[in-house]
Length: 270
Ligand code: NAI
Image 1: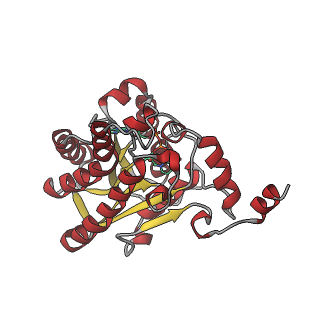
Image 2: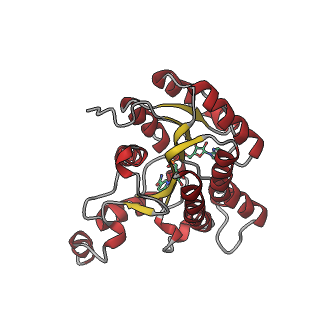
């Protein structure tokens, strides 16, 4: 049921690859709630993905941008304000990629050039997005900027490899830039720490199915789905969360506060 939570608000949504993407589900929800936006992804993902299908459904323009390129980002922010007819109220950074994970390098045998790529694509790109938003003066006051993260930033999940460091960088950037943007423009900056979710990026982590099931058992409410995440993002873009900033918000069905559950006790005592 739509409530016009984002009526009249404008923004940019990064990272919709296919219908499983959290960004894809978010775009549909934001549209339903009255928001308008441009869609963006890396040029290579555009060729492989289905973003044009989503663009059609949302009546949104697609503007390619590699999130590690300052030039692409400047073009994206400038064009988005032109196309949407004014400054922006929300931005979703929904980007993650590790060449080491993708190519199955173990944590004791990392390729350091790839490690730097992981940090750039999955962590530092968030700083580039924020800095570009500031330099192009693209944000309205009380805007909301979000990135998606995972609890492996705080606790070790062996197969998450160098993505754990990238997510720690990402969360730290949200705090540091959140301070700056609040002072400058009353813009809020947060990360949402999401449950394991069956998407292209999620399934790229080896052993994903096992930790999906483990998290399901360890979360009193169960894993939060991609749709649940899209709802939470929509709320965080709305005026109902104006004083929330510089936070890493757990969206995980209770996983992060749970020591053990009866489900796990039952399973382990079999
Ligand atoms: P996804 O694979 O659908 O989305 C990842 C996106 O990153 C893709 O659209 C990809 O094209 C984009 N991307 C990669 N390199 C890029 C670059 N250089 N420039 C611009 N875009 C680039 O997967 P998902 O799961 O929707 O991922 C979205 C976010 O959610 C990521 O930050 C991910 O780490 C995070 N997350 C995912 C979880 C999961 O279990 N799926 C759990 C917690 C967080």
